Image 1 (spheres, rainbow, N blue to C red):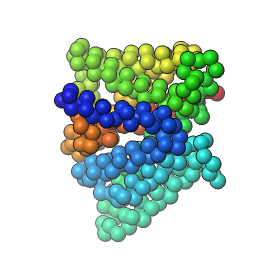
Image 2: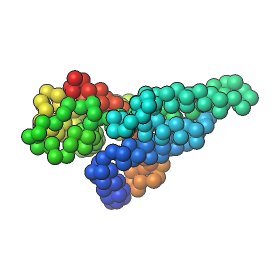
Image 3: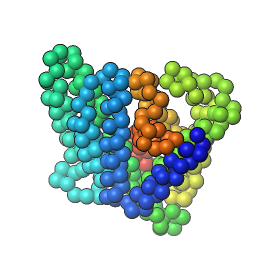
Image 4: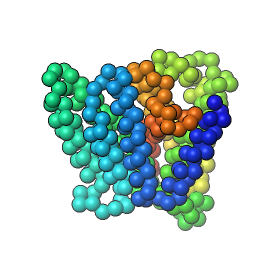
Length: 282
């Protein structure tokens, strides 16, 4: 299993590095592609859980909304990308209702409407990862990470903080974990793992904030809150998989499951990071 996960990581990590190195608009396109793939897997899980939907409509809305949200201030749109994304989501909500009209049982139609709307909205928060550079504090010219630029620095810090939480939770939980929590969602989660993950996320955030020329007090908020958000995103997907009776969302990435299994933490962590960095920037 470890060898299989290593092979999967050997494919995923270089792609992440390339996307981050190039920046916008490739970053926005990459996030939109992840949202589309994740939404596709979400609709399959919803179907297995007994929720009807209109998958291709939902995937299209998820991809387009995520792209517009991720592009943020890097492009010029008549109404602004973020507002356009919100309008597209509202339009998608109406189209989801229209797509459910042919269902002869109104209760089935409502379930289809809800399922399509949820699947379309679920992955869109990934787009906030593309907004971090414009929301976060500016990097001082003498900051160690200043050559990376604000956009790359804050996205990299988000990715590393989430990965640090996952790694810390796994290592500490597997070694010292005794007391488990929310076993009905994920039987492997332990209180020791939670604390280990938060400690690792806070440490990485602290190093990142120092490298970005920012106060470590900001990292004392960013690390734990982004770590908790990552855990919430992971558990939310676990709830969906449990309802569907599935172990993984897919098998696209060897040893890692599907796309949704890799980005579930960021669905909650990205908007939390964006909010925190916007508050710090203000």
